[in-house]
Length: 323
Picture 1: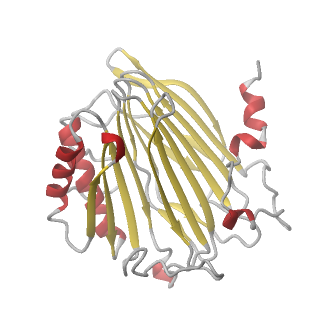
Picture 2 (picture 1 turned 120 degrees about the vertical axis):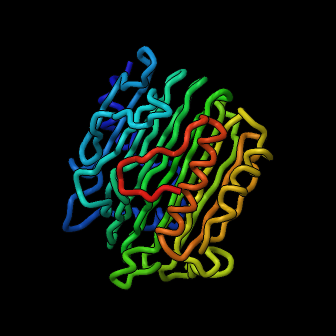
């Protein structure tokens, strides 16, 4: 049997397979800096959650800097069993050559909310790129929410992100993603090189429920495209998505609840639709500012929670506005 530490030390563990050709061309050695795989360049987080009595707690934890977590807290008065976990970075953000991997397993009947302490900054990459792999698994009866703060791609940055989820038919998943245009206050709006994000959700037997991809490449080259163009963000600067995977209610009903909830959200463009294979619903949000999109996302999250968990979205203690 191969020891877990040996697997984690193998570059194949934290290096994404089947990289898009657009990123592969940047996969070159870092000159004048720490090479890929160096200490501090590989952030690993491996968490398993289970139930103890009526509360969800950590059963297994492995972390390698720059990724780490603090002790989970239980802050939702309507779901006191749910563990809220904040992922932290010991640095200021992702830089070229960084390779992050997060693995989270939510055991039978467990309830976990996973988020980040703050936005994920992505710094300029002159020779390479940064990657983040997120693998989530929700067992029967589990509730898993993964709602990280937005990604902020700086000028010249390159990020590849892949989120793979395995969700049991009798589990509930709420998954979100938000991308900002950059450091707008510094005049940086869509001046990153490449942002590529893949999302894939499957059943435990491997059945693919749906896959989604967001590719933004405002940089130079024949495949570059203005993110504000009509075929991408349609003149908007901020894009977000929320996926609600459940069999508790039929998809059409979930769509109706989400549409009703976000109908009153101003300054944003929203689209709600059923997910394939009758596994739930999804909403995409476009807007001019992070505040407007965040408000719409929280409204949608709150609506999904009220229907599925009979509990409103709680205060996550991050200065968020309530719907």
